[in-house]
Length: 261
Ligand code: ZN
Image 1: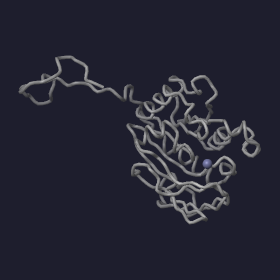
Image 2: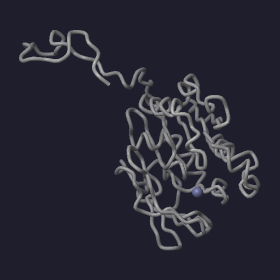
Image 3: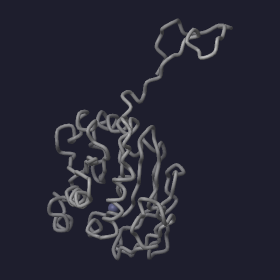
Image 4: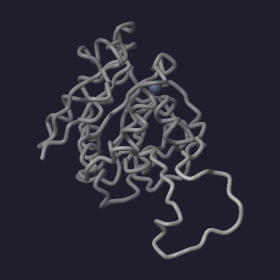
C-alpha cells in the first residue's frame, strides 16, 4: 500500500529571503517531499499557498493520506474555506503533521482549540531533542537524544491542549525547554506537531530530522476507510431506539426536524 502525502508550503520566505532560497532552492516543501519520497511506500507531492485553492481542492484532500503543513509569514492569507476543508478531512481520517511555525497555522489552531502560543528567540542556538518514548514509532531508529547546532528557540509554556503522547522534549542553549513532538487525535485523524524547522537554518537537511519526518508520515497514516460525513449529527427517533421506550415530557423539535448547528 502506498501512502499519499502532500507537503503544503507557504513558499514565501523562499521567494523573498536569499538565505532561505540558498538553503532550499526548490523550496522547503520540496525538500520535505524529497525526504518523504526516500521512504519505501510513500508518494509525496507538494502544494503551495500561491496555487488556486492553495493546491488543496476537495478532490485532492480526499486522495491525501497525510498532509504536512509549513507556514509562517502568511497564515492570514490562507482562505477560511480551505481551512475548514482541511479540518474536515482530518476529522474524516486524514493524517496531519504540523511543522515548526505551523503552531499558528489556521488549521492547527482550529484542530487544537487553544491559543498555541509560546516564547521564541531567533539566535541560532543549539537545540537538544530528547526522546521521551524509546519505542514510539515516530522515534524509531533515533538515539536517546540528538542535536541541531542552529535553531530558533521555542519555549514553554506552549498553549496547546494536553497531548495524547509527548514524543520529544527540547532543551535550548539559552536554558528554555519545549515539548517539541506531540501527538493528538481529532475525529478519526492522527495529528503530530514537530517543532524544529526554522527557515534560515538547514534543519530539513538533518538526518535525524528526516528520520522523524519519515516515521511521522507512517504513524499519521490511518489506513481505515475515510468517514464520508464526519460532522453528521443524526436524530434517532423513539421508534428506532434499541430498547423499547415511551416518549415522556415535552420536547422542542418536531419529528424529522434537523438539529440546530
Ligand atoms: Zn521559525
